[in-house]
Length: 157
Image (cartoon, rainbow, N blue to C red; front, side):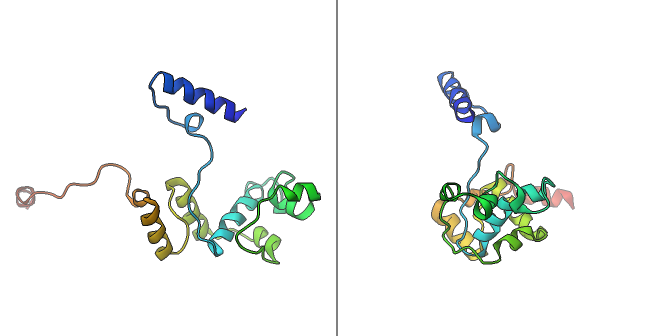
């Protein structure tokens, strides 16, 4: 239904040469590059921890509609739906998902989601942002500040 609604709205806007903003026009899902190391595991842990963080369950694997539930308790067919990871699943994965959130990690991850910034080590972020043309994700919002002229500096003194 969501795909139908979004497709309808986008076609309606295109035919009238209008630009729409908001989740109906832009879709709900966002993507950003993720380094294939502990940063990837942090993203997956955050996804599989959502129901626990929201207080819907006491343990992540108890949420029937999550990938963690499928991974732990799903049938063979349900497990087959899950995509392969670029890393091996750690043996203590369920316990990692159920640990308390690391606020610094969560804040950095949310920044990547909101701004479309690469998520990884600083060096990797710079390299991948340059390679993919994502430098704008690191600029602050709004117009760039203009340096004051020499006359304005003298007048301010």
